[in-house]
Length: 573
Image (cartoon, rainbow, N blue to C red; front, side, top):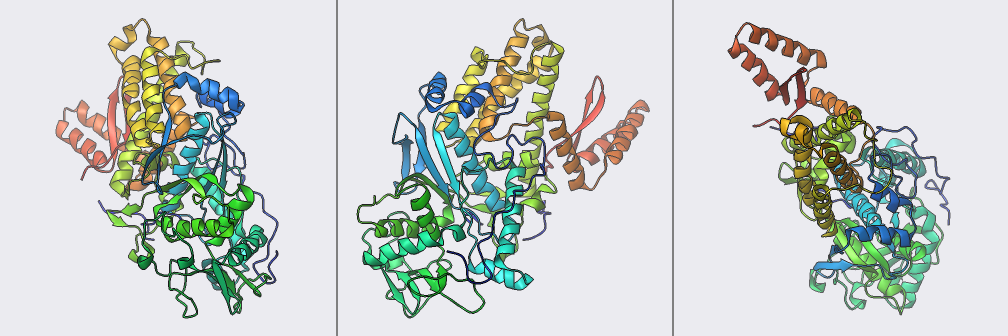
């Protein structure tokens, strides 16, 4: 099956102006909720639990650090490990201060000149889950994600549409926020913009020059790569391999081809700021180093982003940090965490290949929870292959998940049980085993795909308790259902897959399935009626033809005691 999305691998990354790109007041975030399933309003600094987030997750979201640690001890024995790009191995992740458990995490944000694409969806969903998981394990997390709001691409877009840079960046920051909300990603603790920290960048550049690691030429300032011992320690590149990096123009005035721009002299029609080297604007790499030093300190706990940012961007950030102060740690970040590439039909996603598309193009045809499920069903460090068939499969699996929970909820209400336990998880031996397996997976380098897999036996058990004769006769039926529900929803809360209304989610998935195959609900109901008439007439060949025709469009018919219903399924080629 060919990818039907409109054509468009990124591993995503991803002092006031004297002219058009002026610093302006921040506009309010988009307030219209994209869907009711999202657990947290945009702008909330931390996780806000809903009734469907597990009690333990809710407690950890609102409790103090000591209370979080005590509650998390209920799932003792699991330490958190993360793959550290710089160390080339998985390492145990611990807070520097075991008493406060304070952790700061910085993730490189988007350059705001266009709508966000599937690569952005992956990187920010990955680090959203890491944010959630660390809080769940009792860490007190400060999550910082920046906006690059001064850049060559922004300037080009502003000139193309005849707008000021600030108008372009404000619009696409708002659009980015809406996309993140729709995907269910929590708001970071802080979201600094590059243009808010020009003075900090200038200050850091001055220190790098004073320490002998940068030089000014005709209003430009370049970092001297050969001057810094250990350059390349993050990416593993040797000095002879280094060339001018992404977004860095080759310039004969450089002392070495690998030297990169810290400050760019003013050009006609471009935004500029005053500096000791003349009017100009910062280079790309310096913004993150300066904002981290200013907001989080000289050494942070986690620095994240797409794999393609390892070099040159993160390598240069590390170099700038080391060069700007005599006593700085050569780590800059204790852990460097990178997610893998996104491929489309096994080819790297790229604008040049014409296989690039936006989050919104995808969500026209697939529910946000389907996309999130799809993204989390591959380990974050692995490349992820993006295709209609794989999204269809994710849609079918996600539908099964929420239908199972919906059936469970309906039966629990019928049996007179409360919608959620008032205190504690209420786990049984079976559900505690499920929760421990999911916890182990998530703590082991954020194994989201293993956690989802570990939920499968629990979902099967719920269906047996709800629908089978054996399940109905189980003397502990309600107790088991409540325990399994608690464990499943606990894990879904950490994964950001919780929802408030299962019926609404299921309906949304069905509507998008109809959109993908070009049918309407009336078409399907008409086909069901035609099949029923054929069966009454014992025309089973016609009955099978109707059923198979719908299945070829990704619609499966299920005959139940209450009548025939349909659900989305994966189309088998």
